[in-house]
Length: 112
Length: 114
Image 1: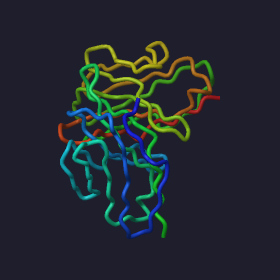
Image 2: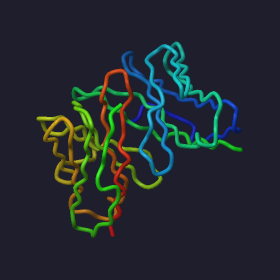
Image 3: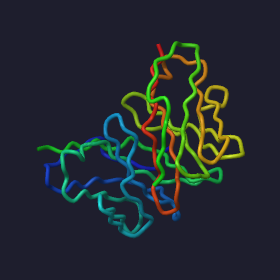
C-alpha cells in the first residue's frame, strides 16, 4: 500500500506559486520521497526527490519537515502547462529492490 | 536519463486473446518495473523484472495472467493473458537507470479489450 496521502485536487493562478502538500507519517529512516507528475495520456514525469534535506532543481523545490512525516512540493511560478496530476511517493525497499508505490495523487489545475 | 520505447502504443483486442507488450531501453538497467493504470486511476505496480531471474509479482497479480520475460539488460516483455474487458488499462514500464536520478517511465500501451 502507498505510504502517502495527498489532497485530491488543488488549483492556483498562473504565475503564482503552487504548494502541494503530502503526508507520509509512516516513512522509515532510509526511505526517499519522490514527486512525479502525469499530464493526460503521458507517462509519469520525474520532478524531484529527497531524503531529509530540502532540494531544488530547475522544475521545483521540495521541502521535507524535520520529522520527515510530511513534505511540500513547490512550483515557484506555475504555468498552464503545469496542470497535471502530481504524485508524492515514498520509495520502498522490498525483495532486494527499491520500488515506487503510487498513491492517488493531487490533480492540480492552473487557472489563467 | 534513460529513454524507453514501448510497443505497441495502443491496441484493441478480443476477449480471450493475449497481448505481449515490449519495453526497450537505450541503456543497460538492472531492474525494470511494470505498472497498470486503470481508467481514471493511479498507477499500480504489477511486478519487478530482474535480468536472469523470475519476476517478483505484487499482491493481486500472478504469473499465469501476466507472464514477464527479461532476456537481457535492455529489454522486457509483459503479456496480458486471456484478456477480459477488465484488463482494459494503460500498461507502463519503468526503469531506474542511474543512481541519484529518478525512475523513467515509458509512454505506455493503451489496451482496450472488447
